[in-house]
Length: 519
Image (cartoon, rainbow, N blue to C red; front, side, top):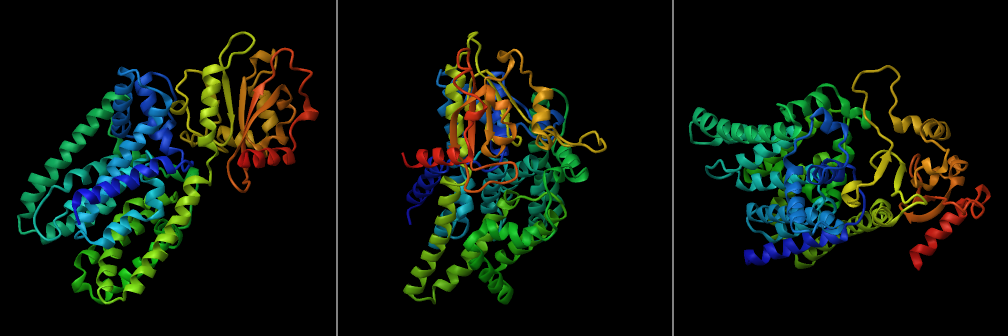
């Protein structure tokens, strides 16, 4: 199959995901990349506590900031391009990594099929997440790994992975040991002239970039490990049992591809001498899952870098099986795998949690156009779980915005509760303590919240009128809702038009969502 055609096909799929995937996944997609790059380039924005404490590397945001700076110099820094181009950049890198996977696996048709169809990779492959960058670099490094010969080119992307995400070293430590054991070159020479030199060059450049942007000498991988691993700060944002990655995490990321993966495990165990690469990859996968399982805070995206390893095992086994399978069986298997990936990819990319993305253009219009009776610009208050939406990167207007913070207990205070927790314990008390109500012009001009909060702060909202109600999810959760609402402060002369008796009921809100969906 023509390699240029293959790359074109892969690139087309990844670029399509940029325009198809219009839902919200995790805050880090924005708050650890786009928001940081926006502040670096344009001088205003918000940096979360991770950047204040120095546990994040500026390497990835600086790449996006360079793109932003170029747009600014060309006077093309529209919000649409600020949001779109970083995703296109990431999608292109993902496409190249997929192409390298195809080459690594022997240019097999099953390899092309199985790298294009996974729902999770379609869902995250164009998102500006450090985990997506890590997964792409991992795939590229694996494709240059000396499985059957000699070579150290893989050390460059592997070293970058380990600097950006120190937990990536869990993957590369067993693979590096395997390389040293099988290599015909001197182990000492490899370590001193290749591993050490490349590692020091990558670390030196990364430390230089971080030191410049953080403003003082800092080694971010050490800070990352200190806070997230040694101090277990990550558990503040949720914890799962030790076996979660084995029973839920990895099977969910693989989806229906779990079936060929299990078949690949069985074939590798039964005929390990014929599946040397798969055997080493399975050892690496197992060790990585064991190490990651010791950390309380677990997320699906934390195992995304294992996806190319798992898919190789699938390709290796299924390709051998296909030689003795009937044509009908092959097509049926491919159809089941395709359908099993398309359905979750479509639902999660276009339906589930789309509210924050649909919200931002409306807030952008408000930020650009709104003026109150004193000709003051918008002042937006987000009464939502922290980081529930993108921020300045999707508005690109220097207006006042405030959200409920959720910084962890960095000072080890007793009975610590973050601002979001204090708000949700007693919303009205928090509002009366933090938001002035006299004069009315001291109130935020706009309030953004989930519909589940509307009735709880009804008295506060008597000063506002409902401007937008945006469909978000199918079910309400403890702190989120089915819709995101935007309220606008009443202007002078509107006092008699809206009052507390006219706050929308839950039935009115659901009716408006229904109308918006079908009109």
